[in-house]
Length: 120
Image (cartoon, rainbow, N blue to C red; front, top):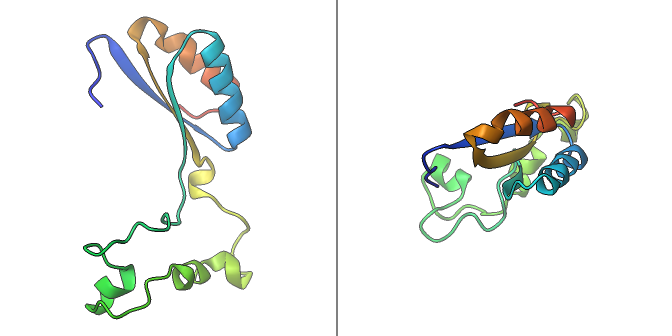
């Protein structure tokens, strides 16, 4: 994405998708249109490995004959053993709202995002 002259990108991190979606709704009501909500996760998406991009185990063991499932990596998570501190998400704020707007509207957008609990 290439920003046009006079445009700014705002990245806001939220602890919950409810807060993120509420902020996005308010921003849309105010006329902001170029908004995106994403979740940052520690687990890779399934299907991310293809014929040219082998699994993590195949890279580590330098072989292509290893099991390509992600189950073993997910089972190695500390929360599985009960020793983890609970359902920890990356940084405690795994929901990212990206917003492109004119420089003149940045302060208003940032204030709305902060009102709904964002770290901007």
